[in-house]
Image (cartoon, rainbow, N blue to C red; front, side, top):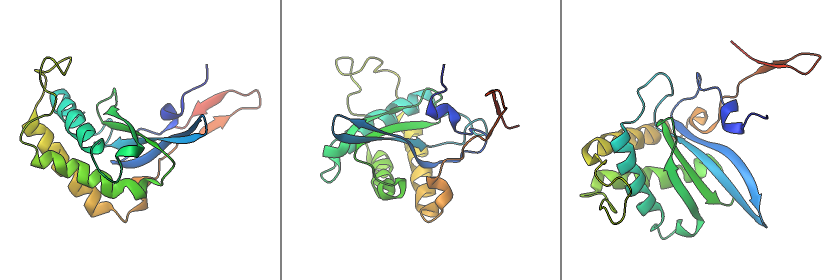
Length: 174
């Protein structure tokens, strides 16, 4: 079985940032999946699950209502490892080109007074939210993106290098 592209990223070297995970063609439309990495995997703790849920609700609402970008947004949701989010958009923009959008989206969490859709009728786990902790993560990540907006490392995935033997076997580097 082939390894999926997101597992080819060297998670021991990735830092918080905005990365192009993959670009696909769906019909005649380019669709880009972005890795929005909020914490450093395997170094920092994962994002609190209730805070992650609140970030998902608030930022999805922001993105789907932003006048400039809403027609491009397909999906916003958490990674299973709870270190970030996937953003799927129509088109293929460089990660740096959506940095401002994401700074604004995370800043919108700081301004939120409630979590949209946090009611039993709207959410499958409406009691699992933590707006206070979500605000802390949002402020931390928005500040980080603002401070590092000119650092190319926050926009370029570190890849795992593999040794391929003559008989086709692949090995991860150590």
